[in-house]
Length: 155
Image 1: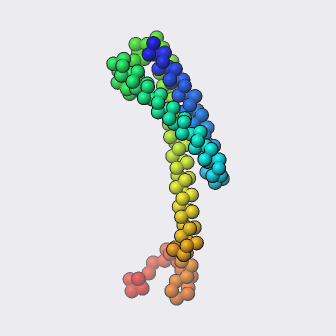
Image 2: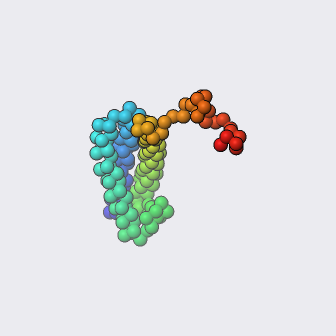
Image 3: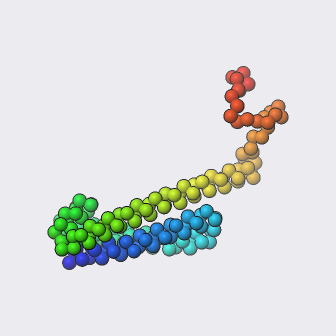
């Protein structure tokens, strides 16, 4: 019976991971367009999906441990070898792993975009506040070149 439950969890998580991937793609679009309202809505959709994946992962681990197998891919392979649902368990596990990896990649991409936006906004705010004015001219009034090498006597 635990093999059937394990398969149900995998299939449910495949659906959940596909939904999460779609939300992450929408999040990327909203981040690019800087649509804060849409980002907030997406966050309210993303959190329950992540929680469901976490709950099911814990339940899958418990099922494997209760059946005296380790809660890792090797344990799953050993468990599947004893089950009549062998191929379904392994293929759904592989599919879920691939989807989770795609979600992680999309999340990292979104994180890079967020950090880039934060850096840009921070730089603009520093300029507005007068903390970080761009160095257009040097102290002599000449156009400044930040890449120009100066002798030690002028440093």
